[in-house]
Image (tube, rainbow, N blue to C red; front, top):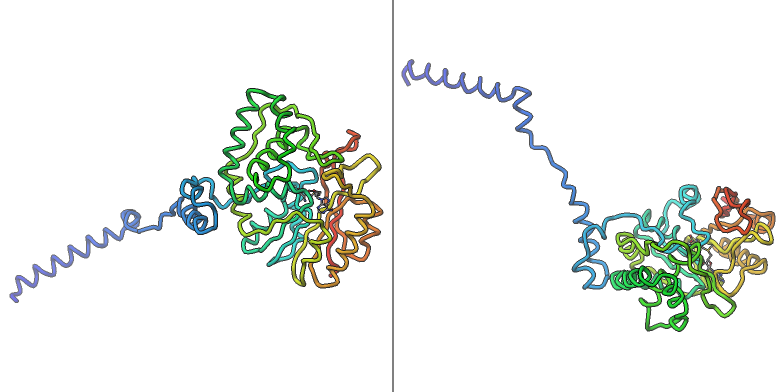
Length: 350
Ligand SMILES: C[S@@+](CC[C@H](N)C(=O)[O-])C[C@H]1O[C@@H](n2cnc3c(N)ncnc32)[C@H](O)[C@@H]1O
């Protein structure tokens, strides 16, 4: 190579270096760094795939909107007296750090179950209640969410046109109560009555017939679609049974966790609502509950109970660790007694 061409080459190399220096200038380089741009839909897509692999009805899955499968924490789909949604934050410190197998003998609106299932997604659960219509509604939400919502839409449309007459017409369909063949119809009736009746009470008379009058809200929301799907997802694989609490305790094993929220022991003779079912829940039942609770704790079951803060309950559970939480009480005959009250939380002695 001649001296002339060598000079030419080194001049070209110098020019290149200058350009690459320019490119490494902080400003232009901003455009060259390949940043990983987060995909806002990725989480939903993953969730949707997981949802698809669950054992839900094929027809529902094929057209389930993405919104309906977001990983949200399900909320109770019924209004329930004594519901625990407002107490979850205060309850958190009483729950175990991990739960493999969960029992809830008085499930009611299920606020605690939905909360724990969100926290421990692999948790196996057995939910029980003596109210057959309630357990049937859980089954319908678990297995037929879409069909259930369709029937609720039909109820809403009729109620809009016919008002109170329609409420009383549906309330009188006592023939549906207990009909094993009509899971979705029964569930839609229960949710409709629960959302349109006075104060969202579920109260039955001595022969087990729902007897609450119509409420004042003429445009109640009967359901939230996203929440029904979230609840349905949370309930997949959950064992549901109409059962008395004594039986449920007998199913528990060492290491299981049982959360117990019975009808509250009355703070005064008129104060509390305990008529969820035609059988009352009095002092005798509270004592029997204590007996099976203590027996389960002896066997190594992790136990937790909430109840009213009364001398009777404190005496009954004196051998356990007792904490308190503050609740707003809604059902009280005496308006002046509605407000913040203490409730006790009972757990195994550490
Ligand atoms: C205080 S509520 C439970 C509220 C629930 N923790 C919630 O968050 O909505 C009491 C529940 O106990 C049920 N119950 C009453 N007597 C029962 C019994 N002997 N065995 C099982 N459940 C019973 C009622 O049907 C009612 O749903």
